[in-house]
Image (cartoon, rainbow, N blue to C red; front, side, top):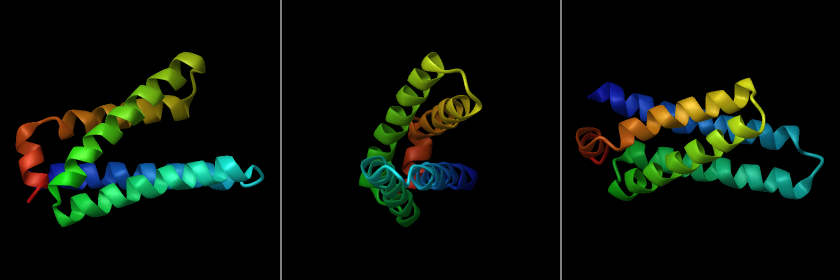
Length: 109
């Protein structure tokens, strides 16, 4: 079960880098930059909470993975790109792990 914690932490850290990177690419637009950095910071805080074994971070992380999955699916529908497929698949895998009760118990300590 230790692998599940590593996978979920990797997901949130990858999503943090993903949103920080998109934010840096849109540096010319201040509001877009701030929005992506706020989203990336939320992912980083959830990853840190899961690392510490906080139950509230696991609960919030489930909803954030669900939001990532929904937005990834919408992005796939709008434009079929590698980045949108990657976001949808990674968030679906993380959501699958986070909804398993055994994994949730292990993540929460």
